[in-house]
Image 1 (cartoon, rainbow, N blue to C red):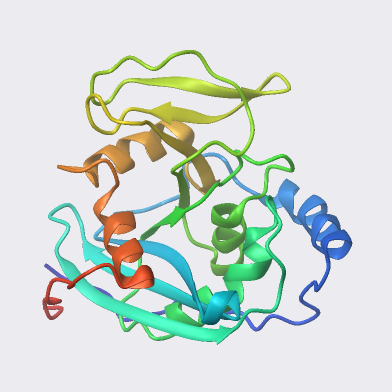
Image 2: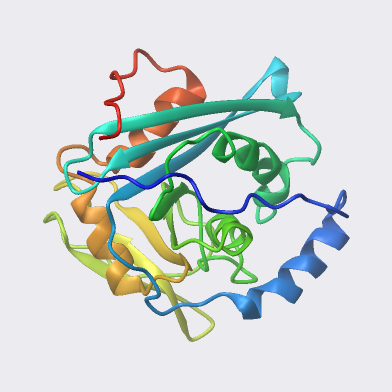
Length: 237
Protein backbone atom coordinates (compact mmCIF):
# COMPACT_ATOMS: atom_id res chain seq x y z
CA UNK A 1 0.00 0.00 0.00
CA UNK A 2 1.31 3.44 -0.92
CA UNK A 3 1.20 6.27 1.62
CA UNK A 4 1.89 9.90 0.88
CA UNK A 5 4.44 12.18 2.48
CA UNK A 6 2.88 14.89 4.63
CA UNK A 7 1.86 17.84 2.47
CA UNK A 8 -0.84 19.56 4.50
CA UNK A 9 -0.04 22.99 5.83
CA UNK A 10 -0.10 23.40 9.60
CA UNK A 11 -1.29 26.97 10.22
CA UNK A 12 0.23 29.32 12.72
CA UNK A 13 -2.40 30.60 15.13
CA UNK A 14 -2.29 34.35 15.42
CA UNK A 15 -4.72 36.43 17.48
CA UNK A 16 -6.06 33.23 19.05
CA UNK A 17 -9.04 34.10 21.28
CA UNK A 18 -8.36 34.12 25.01
CA UNK A 19 -11.89 34.65 26.29
CA UNK A 20 -15.39 33.35 25.56
CA UNK A 21 -16.67 36.50 23.86
CA UNK A 22 -13.89 36.52 21.28
CA UNK A 23 -14.14 32.76 20.75
CA UNK A 24 -17.90 32.85 20.12
CA UNK A 25 -17.46 35.74 17.69
CA UNK A 26 -14.88 33.73 15.74
CA UNK A 27 -17.17 30.70 15.60
CA UNK A 28 -19.94 32.83 14.11
CA UNK A 29 -17.47 34.25 11.60
CA UNK A 30 -16.05 30.90 10.46
CA UNK A 31 -19.10 28.61 10.58
CA UNK A 32 -20.41 29.70 7.13
CA UNK A 33 -17.15 28.42 5.58
CA UNK A 34 -17.84 24.81 6.60
CA UNK A 35 -18.57 22.49 3.66
CA UNK A 36 -21.15 19.81 4.46
CA UNK A 37 -20.95 17.94 1.15
CA UNK A 38 -18.41 15.33 0.06
CA UNK A 39 -15.13 16.83 -1.06
CA UNK A 40 -12.72 14.01 -0.38
CA UNK A 41 -10.67 11.77 -2.59
CA UNK A 42 -9.38 8.24 -2.13
CA UNK A 43 -9.07 7.35 1.55
CA UNK A 44 -5.89 5.40 2.28
CA UNK A 45 -5.22 6.82 5.75
CA UNK A 46 -7.47 7.87 8.61
CA UNK A 47 -6.37 9.87 11.64
CA UNK A 48 -7.83 9.93 15.12
CA UNK A 49 -7.54 12.86 17.51
CA UNK A 50 -8.08 13.01 21.26
CA UNK A 51 -6.95 15.29 24.07
CA UNK A 52 -6.20 14.68 27.73
CA UNK A 53 -4.85 16.89 30.48
CA UNK A 54 -2.02 16.65 32.97
CA UNK A 55 -0.96 18.61 36.05
CA UNK A 56 -4.56 19.10 37.20
CA UNK A 57 -5.47 20.62 33.84
CA UNK A 58 -2.51 22.97 33.53
CA UNK A 59 -0.96 20.96 30.67
CA UNK A 60 -2.79 19.92 27.52
CA UNK A 61 -1.77 16.53 26.07
CA UNK A 62 -2.91 15.99 22.47
CA UNK A 63 -2.66 12.63 20.71
CA UNK A 64 -2.93 11.83 17.02
CA UNK A 65 -2.89 8.33 15.56
CA UNK A 66 -2.71 7.52 11.87
CA UNK A 67 -4.13 4.24 10.59
CA UNK A 68 -4.16 2.66 7.16
CA UNK A 69 -7.58 2.26 5.59
CA UNK A 70 -9.50 0.02 5.30
CA UNK A 71 -7.39 -2.45 7.32
CA UNK A 72 -6.93 0.00 10.26
CA UNK A 73 -3.30 -0.86 11.01
CA UNK A 74 -1.41 1.72 13.06
CA UNK A 75 1.13 3.65 10.95
CA UNK A 76 2.12 6.56 13.16
CA UNK A 77 1.32 8.19 16.47
CA UNK A 78 2.26 11.54 17.93
CA UNK A 79 1.89 13.31 21.25
CA UNK A 80 2.25 17.03 21.94
CA UNK A 81 2.07 18.93 25.21
CA UNK A 82 1.64 22.62 25.89
CA UNK A 83 0.38 24.87 28.68
CA UNK A 84 -3.42 25.03 28.73
CA UNK A 85 -4.30 28.50 27.51
CA UNK A 86 -8.12 28.58 27.55
CA UNK A 87 -10.66 27.73 30.27
CA UNK A 88 -13.00 24.74 30.10
CA UNK A 89 -16.24 26.06 28.58
CA UNK A 90 -18.67 23.65 26.86
CA UNK A 91 -19.05 24.62 23.22
CA UNK A 92 -15.61 26.25 23.12
CA UNK A 93 -13.37 23.22 23.53
CA UNK A 94 -11.53 23.81 20.25
CA UNK A 95 -9.99 26.98 21.69
CA UNK A 96 -8.63 24.95 24.59
CA UNK A 97 -7.44 21.95 22.57
CA UNK A 98 -6.66 22.85 18.93
CA UNK A 99 -3.32 24.64 19.46
CA UNK A 100 -1.82 21.48 20.98
CA UNK A 101 -3.56 19.20 18.46
CA UNK A 102 -1.88 21.13 15.63
CA UNK A 103 1.51 20.54 17.29
CA UNK A 104 0.80 16.82 17.28
CA UNK A 105 -0.19 16.85 13.60
CA UNK A 106 3.04 18.67 12.83
CA UNK A 107 4.97 15.55 13.89
CA UNK A 108 3.32 13.22 11.36
CA UNK A 109 5.33 12.07 8.36
CA UNK A 110 2.30 10.80 6.42
CA UNK A 111 -0.65 12.79 5.18
CA UNK A 112 -4.07 11.83 6.65
CA UNK A 113 -6.86 11.60 4.09
CA UNK A 114 -9.64 11.75 6.68
CA UNK A 115 -9.68 12.84 10.34
CA UNK A 116 -12.06 11.55 13.03
CA UNK A 117 -12.22 13.83 16.06
CA UNK A 118 -13.32 12.97 19.56
CA UNK A 119 -15.94 15.73 19.72
CA UNK A 120 -18.55 17.51 17.67
CA UNK A 121 -18.60 18.87 14.15
CA UNK A 122 -21.67 20.91 13.23
CA UNK A 123 -23.68 19.24 16.04
CA UNK A 124 -22.96 22.37 17.99
CA UNK A 125 -24.99 25.43 19.06
CA UNK A 126 -23.13 27.59 16.54
CA UNK A 127 -22.49 24.71 14.08
CA UNK A 128 -18.75 24.92 14.69
CA UNK A 129 -17.39 22.26 17.01
CA UNK A 130 -13.80 21.09 17.23
CA UNK A 131 -14.05 18.76 14.21
CA UNK A 132 -15.26 21.63 12.04
CA UNK A 133 -12.64 24.03 13.41
CA UNK A 134 -9.80 21.57 12.87
CA UNK A 135 -11.04 20.63 9.39
CA UNK A 136 -11.16 24.25 8.33
CA UNK A 137 -7.70 25.02 9.72
CA UNK A 138 -6.11 21.98 8.04
CA UNK A 139 -8.35 22.03 4.94
CA UNK A 140 -9.02 18.33 5.51
CA UNK A 141 -12.18 16.17 5.56
CA UNK A 142 -13.16 15.73 9.20
CA UNK A 143 -15.88 13.92 11.15
CA UNK A 144 -17.10 14.64 14.66
CA UNK A 145 -17.49 11.49 16.77
CA UNK A 146 -19.00 12.52 20.09
CA UNK A 147 -19.46 10.14 22.98
CA UNK A 148 -22.26 12.31 24.36
CA UNK A 149 -24.76 14.87 23.08
CA UNK A 150 -23.91 18.56 23.18
CA UNK A 151 -27.10 19.90 21.60
CA UNK A 152 -30.18 18.61 19.77
CA UNK A 153 -32.95 16.06 20.20
CA UNK A 154 -33.59 12.66 18.68
CA UNK A 155 -35.91 9.68 18.63
CA UNK A 156 -34.92 6.35 20.22
CA UNK A 157 -32.19 4.49 18.33
CA UNK A 158 -32.81 0.85 17.37
CA UNK A 159 -30.45 -1.57 19.14
CA UNK A 160 -28.86 -3.14 16.04
CA UNK A 161 -25.39 -2.09 14.94
CA UNK A 162 -25.57 0.46 12.12
CA UNK A 163 -28.97 1.81 13.10
CA UNK A 164 -29.20 5.58 13.39
CA UNK A 165 -31.67 8.41 13.78
CA UNK A 166 -31.30 12.10 12.92
CA UNK A 167 -30.08 14.54 15.54
CA UNK A 168 -32.19 17.70 15.19
CA UNK A 169 -31.81 21.24 16.48
CA UNK A 170 -34.05 24.20 15.67
CA UNK A 171 -35.36 22.44 12.57
CA UNK A 172 -31.90 21.51 11.25
CA UNK A 173 -30.49 18.00 10.92
CA UNK A 174 -27.15 18.53 12.61
CA UNK A 175 -25.99 14.94 12.92
CA UNK A 176 -26.86 11.33 13.55
CA UNK A 177 -27.21 9.25 16.68
CA UNK A 178 -25.52 6.02 15.62
CA UNK A 179 -25.53 2.57 17.20
CA UNK A 180 -21.92 1.59 16.46
CA UNK A 181 -22.28 -1.69 18.34
CA UNK A 182 -25.42 -3.59 19.28
CA UNK A 183 -26.80 -2.94 22.76
CA UNK A 184 -24.29 -0.22 23.66
CA UNK A 185 -24.68 3.52 24.09
CA UNK A 186 -24.84 5.30 20.72
CA UNK A 187 -22.36 7.79 19.30
CA UNK A 188 -23.14 11.29 18.06
CA UNK A 189 -21.83 11.67 14.52
CA UNK A 190 -21.69 14.94 12.62
CA UNK A 191 -20.06 16.53 9.63
CA UNK A 192 -16.85 18.30 10.51
CA UNK A 193 -15.77 19.66 7.14
CA UNK A 194 -15.87 18.41 3.53
CA UNK A 195 -17.89 15.28 4.40
CA UNK A 196 -21.63 14.69 4.14
CA UNK A 197 -23.46 13.14 7.07
CA UNK A 198 -24.22 9.91 5.20
CA UNK A 199 -20.57 9.52 4.21
CA UNK A 200 -19.49 10.31 7.77
CA UNK A 201 -21.71 7.52 9.12
CA UNK A 202 -20.34 5.06 6.56
CA UNK A 203 -16.72 5.80 7.44
CA UNK A 204 -17.35 5.67 11.18
CA UNK A 205 -18.89 2.23 10.81
CA UNK A 206 -16.02 1.01 8.63
CA UNK A 207 -13.60 2.22 11.32
CA UNK A 208 -15.56 0.41 14.06
CA UNK A 209 -15.12 -3.32 13.45
CA UNK A 210 -15.35 -4.53 17.05
CA UNK A 211 -15.77 -1.97 19.82
CA UNK A 212 -18.17 0.89 20.48
CA UNK A 213 -15.60 3.49 19.44
CA UNK A 214 -13.88 3.71 16.05
CA UNK A 215 -10.31 2.41 16.13
CA UNK A 216 -9.12 5.95 15.44
CA UNK A 217 -10.88 7.30 18.53
CA UNK A 218 -10.13 4.28 20.70
CA UNK A 219 -6.38 4.38 20.05
CA UNK A 220 -6.15 8.18 20.25
CA UNK A 221 -8.00 8.09 23.58
CA UNK A 222 -5.62 5.44 24.89
CA UNK A 223 -2.62 7.50 23.81
CA UNK A 224 -3.99 10.80 25.13
CA UNK A 225 -4.97 9.33 28.48
CA UNK A 226 -2.18 6.73 28.79
CA UNK A 227 -4.72 3.91 29.13
CA UNK A 228 -2.44 0.93 28.56
CA UNK A 229 -0.02 -0.21 25.84
CA UNK A 230 -0.29 0.81 22.19
CA UNK A 231 0.21 -1.53 19.21
CA UNK A 232 3.47 -1.19 17.31
CA UNK A 233 3.21 1.01 14.20
CA UNK A 234 3.86 -0.56 10.80
CA UNK A 235 6.35 1.29 8.61
CA UNK A 236 4.89 2.98 5.50
CA UNK A 237 5.73 1.10 2.33
